[in-house]
Image (cartoon, rainbow over all chains, first blue to last red; front, side):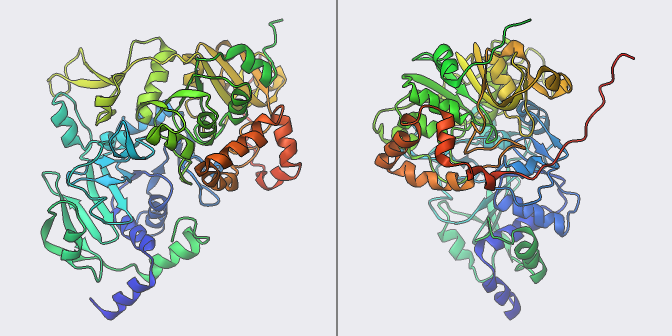
Length: 262
Length: 310
């Protein structure tokens, strides 16, 4: 690693790093289903750099949004004003998502396991939870129907990347088919996990594998922060740090008031 | 001439919502019928099953007020701002009383509305698996009567119809017959209005017949699915109404601190719901200038020409 890349990394925040890496991962994709927050910033950055034709679809049914300011929620007023289309929920979930129009869905979660199953429902027992989380929302639909799923995790820790989920909210296609072999699944599930330490990508068998570490992070740091014996790629890449151009777009154009960047 | 369905909020809630009813209040972040929720609290309804894809502040308030014993939902959170602590206390610690929950993914609960509205025994969907299958007997699987594209047997998940006793929706405008016009993000309001046994439409304005009939495609719920029309300006605050007022983000950000402290929450309900006779008093208490900062800049649609007989 060069001194310059170290400097660049030191100058950017974890959320900026995650956004830039996520935007780069969108290369070659066409339609993205993304919620508010870092995924929206990543889509905006990809549109401003390598993927000008990238389209974002919102859970609220808004397609082709042209918001005059950064939306605060997935269903904020500026998303609707000037949008190309606002669909009803039946059309959004039935035709767009289940109909197979989404290339990449972004999901988050409190826990992920090595097969890319996600928990956003409870910590602890379902009927008597230690922490009640929001639940699925459309996450189970995104997992089942998007061609692939990206997961962004702000903190890579053994309590978020776990051997066993407390609850499976969004089963990966593999798990869904194992539970019921007659269920047909559409997409490949989680293909990419972007964390503050590095990038995991799913192998052919679906198991998440460490494929890149961020500058200054050692492979051992990542395996120690993962709750299962993490598979490591033969060649682990080092992430190219955010460029001044990428950071400039994020800071000056896309989120100048730092609604989501921290 | 058909009879007008207009009513005051007080009369509409008193006539259509009984203790023990299943009541759906819909609106996907946009058009949340908050004033109607406050009237349910004010009239001290009890043992309600409250239904909403995305329980937010008004459901936290209904649970805190002791109006609900059960909640049917698919995502419970305060729109990326924070937790709903009254709901969490009830689920995590049965504090001060238990709250029974019945949980789905978004398409699962939407599918229940669609099956209900369409008079079908179930609605099929590919998602809705995972551990909810073990906890919610209303998520099942059904075998397709037709071969899959690969020739094999195919199963999909299925949810049963939901027929709420009452659906309450908010919209920009309606005529006195209950033809509801909404624009912006539409949520599951049309589906739930048809699924429910009775529907109350709360609107910013009751419009003249000629306004509605000048743009019939804008009517998202026809009068045949509506039992009462309540004119209640700003009745969706702190959520928003496209073209009328923006989301009150400061209120959303302030709520978690109120909700976290049961005493603060009790005081809030006392001050802003029980001590006020109606929503007009709530607006008067906020003050006439309050909505100035939430007023959007006009962005008119282009008119369309429906044509007419020459």
